[in-house]
Length: 158
Image 1 (cartoon, helix red, strand yellow):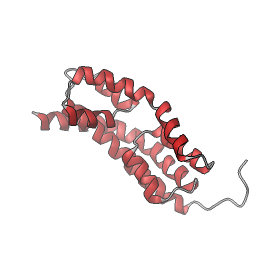
Image 2 (cartoon, one colour):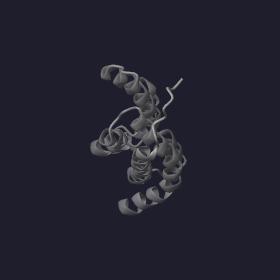
Image 3 (cartoon, one colour):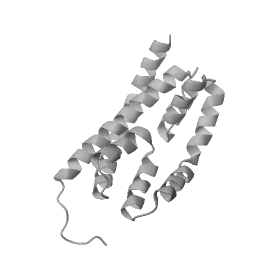
Image 4 (cartoon, helix red, strand yellow):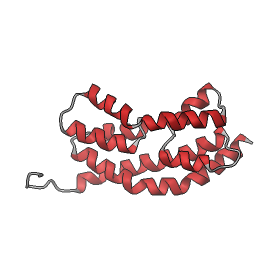
C-alpha cells in the first residue's frame, strides 16, 4: 500500500521535476558565478532545497555577507514553508520521522499538488517530494557543470 502511494507520488512529481530543471540549471550557473564551489553548490540543493533562498544566498555570498545573516535571511524568506508544513501535518498525521521528511520536501509546488490529492498520505507526499528534489538536484548539477563552459566577461558587471 505504501509502495503504491509512493509510486503515485513519484509520477505526480514528474511535471514538478521537469518544471524545476531550467530554474535549477540557472541556480547552478548563478552559484558558480558567485564563486561558490561545485560541491557547495550541489550541497545547497541537496540539503537546502529552497530555490528562492538558494538564489538569494548565492547573491549574498557574492556580496560578502556574513554566513549567519544568510541563514537568518533564508529562514525569513522560507517561513511560508513552515506554515505549509503545519497544514500538511494536520492533514497527513505522519509519524515523527515522516514529519521531518515531509517538512523537508515541502515547496510551493509540492504543497499545491499534494493539497489537491484526495486522501493524501505521507507515502504519496514523500514520492512527490522525492521527484521534485531529484529534478532540482539534477538541474543544479547540470548548471554547475555548465558554468565552467561559460567564459568570464572581460567587462565589469553593472
